[in-house]
Image (cartoon, rainbow, N blue to C red; front, side):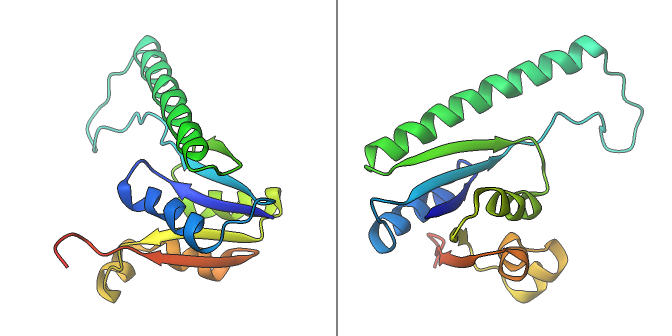
Length: 151
């Protein structure tokens, strides 16, 4: 079975991998760590933007190097935990939609996503990747609740 775990470099997202290892791991599974990288933006917040093609190209090269380094870190994380898996990066900031499309493409049987457990007001204003996945994913979604250190 293909299992998708979205990651963003935070301890919270990586804790979903630990939850998977403890509660859902099977040798036959392939875990896909899905990472969404945001493309360099030309918008500086409403003002005029003076960005040359070289500046954008350099920003893109820097982003690609950062993504490669993060993918290598994720690959090592999978190996260190003894999990068969792969890392796939999408250059798109619409995280929920990317995960749903990846689940369809990979014929995933499960998505495991971490949540901080925001209240209903903040979730209504900001939206929630977890809420989106629960309603739109083509497979089961397990939400791993992560308590903040303050709780």
